[in-house]
Length: 444
Ligand code: ATP
Image 1: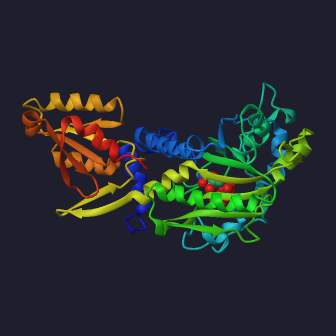
Image 2: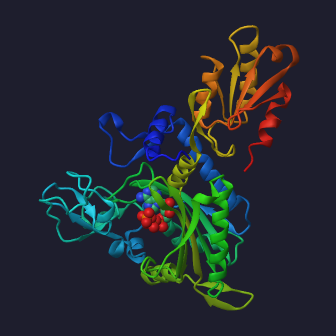
Image 3: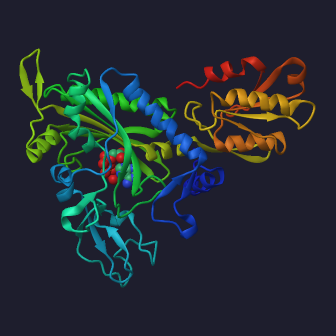
């Protein structure tokens, strides 16, 4: 990562230039903290989600997938504690009309004098803190009254809790087992920001693991280690990853223990994933509010109990941002600045660029043929415009790990050059070996 306080600005502009991320509704002046993923961004984020799904569902025997609705029965959010407690303390400034989180005044700046905190400019008038609920409300059906209020889910986890018996009874699982889900969540954040780090609409990758009470601490430790390993395997710099244990004041009401997996962003160490020991709080509350028994019957031991839950909760957008920040670097090459997104090949949106060296002598025909053959199996990009060096630079900025050039030797000897993004070294590879050569280097 470039050691540069401007790195976020540079990344935002690269994301727009290369089609990673655009501001939502930009032609109307943009909408607060909502971002749209462009052609490369959507591929990158799909790779993140697929890597997660593979590790959590496909490679394990003890986790099932689920895709629950965004809208749920409103009582769900009473049971979960979100109606009463999903609030942030808020203060308004009567002088400038800006709104701040009361617990983050030290990290915020006064809009009229950014070098001071809110409340420190001569005529600031901050109100007393008020509690503000972060859930988005809407109405189900044609009548907009109190009885029709539903919420956009602020987390995906509740869809898992209310379906836990459905999954258990329809699969061959026994406790301990887990349910995994990827989906949108919405929070009316008071202070969104830092690009896609904190937004109002985002995607979560959550897994709830149901265990026998008493074995929860052991499972919590396992999941904490496995999840950290997963982030490391995506190629993140190990020195920028750490675990942060929640102290008693940080611990959520439902949690017996919690760790954040944090990454060192240009704006400081921040959470990218939480691992929580939620005890039997969630199932206990849903049992109480729904009046339905949610106990598990262990036939072998002939005993009934309410399972404990170990949760792993990551934001797909935050992981995507982390990968981009970690991958971003600038290098001086032959007197010019080279910008590189050095993604692990497994998550890079485009795996290879395919170029004819020049637009004649049979090279475009061979390059197009190779491109079409590869494209059936891998995301590849064809480019025949401009000098070869410029084409390499464009692919470096897009994070493409390999560039394949068809040249005079391809026509005579049926070999191509494969140029590596990071070392810029080149290998000569047989035309019919290109796919195998790439595949070998694309696995996580
Ligand atoms: P924070 O303290 O940053 O608000 P949180 O502790 O409320 O986060 P959780 O409720 O544990 O977060 O959510 C789990 C994960 O969901 C977070 O680790 C993060 O990756 C993601 N996430 C939460 N809120 C947002 C948001 N507003 N924008 C993007 N991702 C988010």
